[in-house]
Structures are given as C-alpha cells and as structure tokens.
Image 1 (cartoon, rainbow, N blue to C red):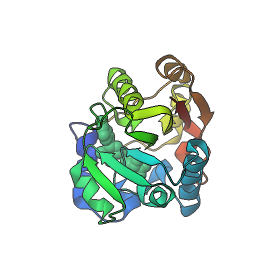
Image 2 (spheres, rainbow, N blue to C red; image 1 turned 135 degrees about the vertical axis):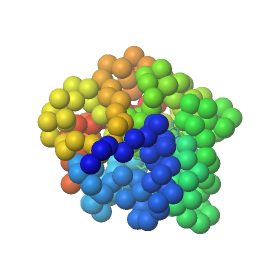
Image 3 (cartoon, helix red, strand yellow; image 1 turned 90 degrees about the vertical axis):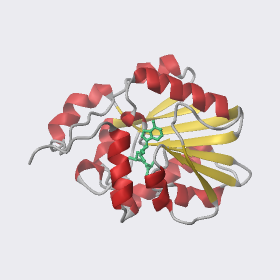
Image 4 (cartoon, helix red, strand yellow; image 1 turned 180 degrees about the horizontal axis):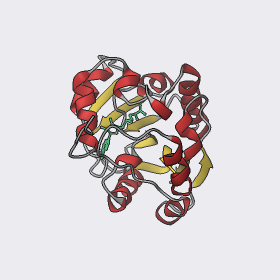
Length: 217
Ligand SMILES: C[S@@+](CC[C@H](N)C(=O)[O-])C[C@H]1O[C@@H](n2cnc3c(N)ncnc32)[C@H](O)[C@@H]1O
C-alpha cells in the first residue's frame, strides 16, 4: 500500500475529525503503540490532577484538546475550562458539553489575554509541531496566558534519547509524516526551572519512549 500523504499533522488530524467516530480513534489512541485503555486514561488524568494540583476555582486550558477525550474527564475538577485545537473539524467531535468552551486556534498564537489561566494541560501535541522554533513560540505563549504562580503540564513528549529504540519497536507508519523528538536539555533551556519526569501510563506502550514537563510560572 502506498503511504497516505498529508501536508502536515494538522491536515492529518483534520481528516480524522471529519471521519468522526470513537473519541480514542479520532485522537489516534486506538492502534499500535498508542492504544489507550481506561486504566491508561485514568493514569493521564491522575497525573494531570496531581501535578497541576487542580482546584475547583481554577481556570484551565486544554491546549491541543483534539476531540476532547481528556477535556471531558477534567472539566468537573475546575471552575472553567477551554479546549483549544488547530482544527474546528476535530473540535466538533467534542460534542455539546456546555461545561467547556471550544476554540479553534493555533498553539503559537493563543487568542487569550495575558494571565487568563491558572493551569494549562497539554497532552500529546508537541510532537506534531513543524519545528523547534515553533515549539519555542508555543512555550512563550503558554507562559504569557498563564498567571504568575500558575502551572502548565506538558505530557507525552517523545524523548530523543529513546528515538532509536522507539523506531526498532514500532511498526512503520502508514503515512509520510514525521514526529518531532525533544531532549530533556531542550526543555531545560527553553523552559528553565521546569520539573521533568518520566511518563508512566499503564498499557500505553508509547509511554516508555516519552517524558512529561511541569512548568511553574
Ligand atoms: C494526538 S491529538 C491529541 C489530542 C488530545 N490532547 C488528547 O490527548 O486526546 C493531537 C492534536 O493536536 C492538534 N494540534 C497539532 N498541532 C497543533 C497546533 N500547532 N496548534 C493547535 N493544535 C494542534 C491536532 O489538531 C490534534 O487534535
């Protein structure tokens, strides 16, 4: 089979959004090393609750929320929540849950004023950015919209140090796109004073090749 050809990852997820269906399927968690079970989901939301220290008074941004799989799980923990994604086509699948606002925008140009949020949750989107300069802009935007003393948790970041083992483990992709890998030193440099820790999500085989970063503003 010839590979599916996409302009970029955003187009890839736009097409997933247009196809619709199960939220895990749309968000890419139903095949290969990326399969996510209910236990895995509970570990992701548990990590978010613990490390962000979510409070019922918090204003929370889910940056790159996709079809809202995780947004739905966290919305009850906070006072208000916004799910932002590059694709309105994927946001449509987040359904009519009026408890969170859906915003279609790019991560490097967040349409919010400074200090709008107490917390930011960002799961599995850094690997889809076009390059590292873009990622630097996103870290800057996160810091701008986060209030002083706020926290930002970035999860599921592919680890450069584990790249070879990852490619030896996974099946070849069925498309032309490449993921961006990060070193922990990159985050030390562009998000100084962040806490970097290994990812441990039950049953999620990608987890062994990924790390998480907690930024405190
Ligand atoms: C694997 S999905 C993750 C969705 C959600 N965070 C989750 O874990 O269920 C990746 C999402 O990132 C979004 N995305 C990719 N690049 C983006 C960008 N530059 N700005 C905003 N969203 C982006 C895609 O549209 C897609 O919905």
